[in-house]
Image (cartoon, rainbow, N blue to C red; front, side, top):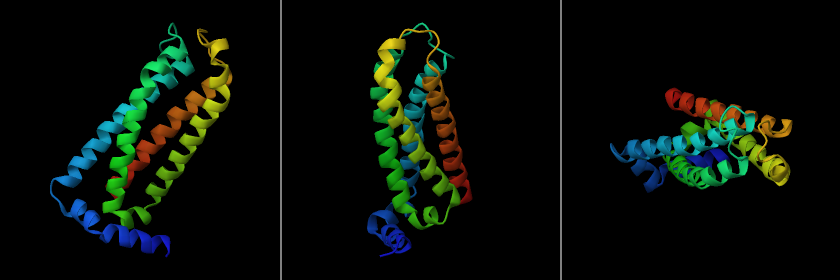
Length: 163
């Protein structure tokens, strides 16, 4: 089965059709998706700004991360589920959208960036945790994270207007 055929099948399932054709369900899912996006990306942005030294400089980075990550992960989970439901209802449109492909690529890069942070910078956090100026590697990861999430949001919003 080709990816196109899979998208056609997925979109034409009773759930996909039901979400797409409902006057209430699709807008409710979309609203949940946007609110979860604000929670997830908003909290990640706070941490990224701390890494960049543009906010909360007097707070240990580990403390900032510990306080916001549960919220960020919860928001990401809701955003992922609601985004999956939105995709389910319009899989063919998403398949044909260059903005959707850009969004997925940027999401993948954001995941790789987070993994690099966990495997490198996070492991040495105890040595710079309370420093006013974080190491260059932490600042680069924080800046890249912010840029990627801005791109993800821009691609997602553009995608929605180009359907």
